[in-house]
Amino acid sequence: MSEQPVVGIVMGSDSDWPVMEAAAQALEEFEIPFEVDVVSAHRMPREMIAYGEAAAGRGLKAIIAGAGGAAHLPGMLASVTTLPVIGVPVPLKYLDGMDSLMSIVQMPAGVPVATVSIGGARNAGLLAVRLLAAFDTDLAQRMAEFQQELNEQAAEKGRKLRSKVGGGASSFGFGG
Ligand SMILES: Nc1c(C(=O)O)ncn1[C@@H]1O[C@H](COP(=O)(O)O)[C@@H](O)[C@H]1O
Figure (cartoon, rainbow, N blue to C red):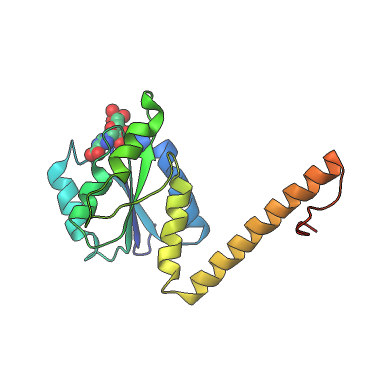
């Protein structure tokens, strides 16, 4: 990626990538330049702090941080940067990601992390797009078009279900 990255996607281990790549995919869809790296609070504490402290100065506008288990990476990054941090709880073999979710979502007041669902890396990417779109009318327009497509896909599902099951449109009249 040659353009200056504006979103950093970091994770505690390369084993998180199969989950985290959905964040990268969402950013690619909106042509947002991003970088990816492994940055672990537990295993690379000094590098993690250096990454967080340098992030804003390097031109990043948001950080997406994914980790599994005792997932301290998103919160620790949030403590050393002014950037918005979006946390992705990565599910591991045991505890189904509940451990990651609790580790990321229960931040002390004053140090926010915007936590998405367990394995919700695509929404993390889309949330980063929305943060950027707040200051970019062209990007906001593209987000609106994306939302319209979602609307049409959902309505189409209703049409298909009704044609399979029978009956008319819902009493609310939507779905066409
Ligand atoms: N939760 C963290 C942190 C951290 O929060 O700093 N560093 C690594 N990890 C997590 O350990 C899991 C297992 O990692 P390995 O697969 O490398 O053993 C990964 O999900 C990673 O995010």
